[in-house]
Amino acid sequence: PELIDKAFKIREAFKEGNYSKAEEFVNEEILKQFCFAGELNEIEDEIIKLEKEGFKEFVVGPPFGKKPEETLLKLKKLL
Image (cartoon, rainbow, N blue to C red):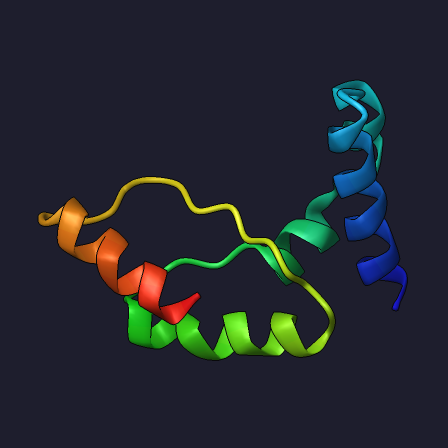
C-alpha cells in the first residue's frame, strides 16, 4: 500500500507537470516494484498483478527487440 500510494503521488505530480516533486518519490524500492523487463510472456504476470492493484496506465520504453512493430502490436493486445 505505501508503494502504491507513492506511485499515485508520482502520477499526480506528472499530471501537474511538477517533475521535481515526482522525483522526490522515486527510490530503489519503488523501481524494483514497478519496473520490469523481459519477453512479453514474462512480463504479462507483472502487468496483471499491477492491474489488480488498481493501475490503469503503463509506460513502455525501448528496447523493443529486433522487430519493434511486432512487439508493440503484441503489447497493445496485452494491455
